[in-house]
Amino acid sequence: MNRLRIDPATYDAWSALPVYFQEQSPFYVEGDVSTPTAFIELIGHGIVAEADVLLVETTSRPDDRYWLEPSAPNGVYSLVDLLALDFHHPLLYVGAYDETTDYVTLKRLWDEGYRVPSKRWSRETYEAHLARERQVEHRLSPTTVCAICTSDLSNRYGPLAVRLMECHMEAEAEMWVCPTCHKALHCK
Ligand SMILES: [Zn+2]
Ligand SMILES: [Zn+2]
Image (cartoon, rainbow, N blue to C red; front, side, top):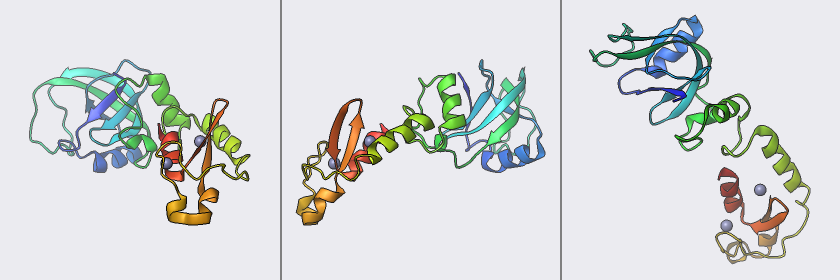
């Protein structure tokens, strides 16, 4: 496991994390990791922080005013020091990574993946992809039918349809698609 998971229903992470980040004070999170740094995930939301783990203890639940439940059984707790906190990071969105995403990939997404639509891109490869597609932007599509959803844009947009079609380039192949399907392709 490369993530420490906090359930926002039992711990008020939305209030606690900004305070602990600003005060630079370590706090305990349930669980432990085997990776060089820990990513902190809010269950049901996504990753919002990266932290150094200072120590790991099996103990009764450490005191913290942000617990929302009165008590809990003994468990493993990591004392963490937040390195970075971002409630707007794209990794906050469920689906940007999954159980199989390894630490190296998460670290790359956290550090440089900002504003890339899915985990298959780094900022570099995504920008290169967009740059390549911009080079063919001036070309008129040979069709008004999307290769993915097969809708014919001319039904709704008439002669404008040909200008709305976008070229998606995958390896050496190119594909004419509607703007929505193009966006979806980038998110896969
Ligand atoms: Zn389409
Ligand atoms: Zn594309």
